[in-house]
Amino acid sequence: MRKTGFTLIECLMGLALSLLVAAAGFELFARARTVFSRLKAREESAQAALAALDRMRIDLLHAGEGLAVEVGLRLVAAAEALPGELRTVSLEKPLVLAAEAAAGDETIALASTSDIAAGQAIVLRDGAAGEVRTALRVEPGAVALDAPLGRGYAPAVTAVSLLETVSFRFDPAARVLRRRVNASPAQPLFEGAAADWTLDASSPLVRLRLELDMEGAPAHEATVFLKNVALAGRL
Image 1 (cartoon, rainbow, N blue to C red):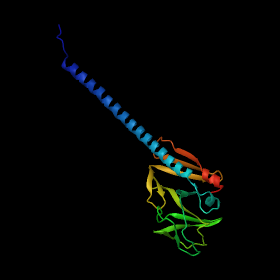
Image 2 (cartoon, rainbow, N blue to C red):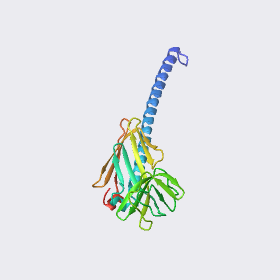
Image 3 (spheres, one colour):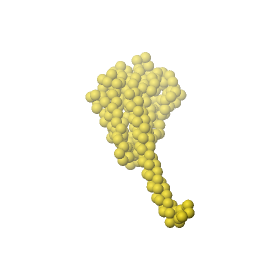
Image 4 (cartoon, helix red, strand yellow):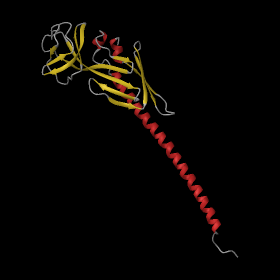
């Protein structure tokens, strides 16, 4: 009569089978973790791309805001699609001319110079005539311009506007899309994607596209109608 228990050979066989099952389980777990990490990274990149497109959409919707007359007169371009750069312009705040400015002046007197920074664009408009200048230096009650004025402006009939310029630039070497406001340093908006855009002036529509640097990841696109440009009648 055989005694209860396992022989040495049976124990070794059971141990070998257990190791095989454990190894298969670890392999399956490792593969599942790799797939999960890949899907998670793809989902996070997709969410970041959507957030970047949303930021661009908001800026484009503000293009030309508060500048209907200036855009209609072609003093400023509400939106421009340049090679590697997408630029929008809107009104940051109206300014008040404190004294008459003569043709050839390189400095204008303003009632307040708060919130004006060097490098910002300023539009002076008298009726249907006007010009754009860049602030080189901001002083108490005055702003030095980058070029002399082409004509004179009287405070009672002159509209002065401080512009907010937002630009998006794509660096193909670093695969980075950056956003810049006025003359401030450009900040990374999205990394790891090819960015492209087109502007149809007749619509006017801007089409945005971000193509992720991930295998199997779909491209993300958005189309923005420039409502302020349409109201002004031109870019």
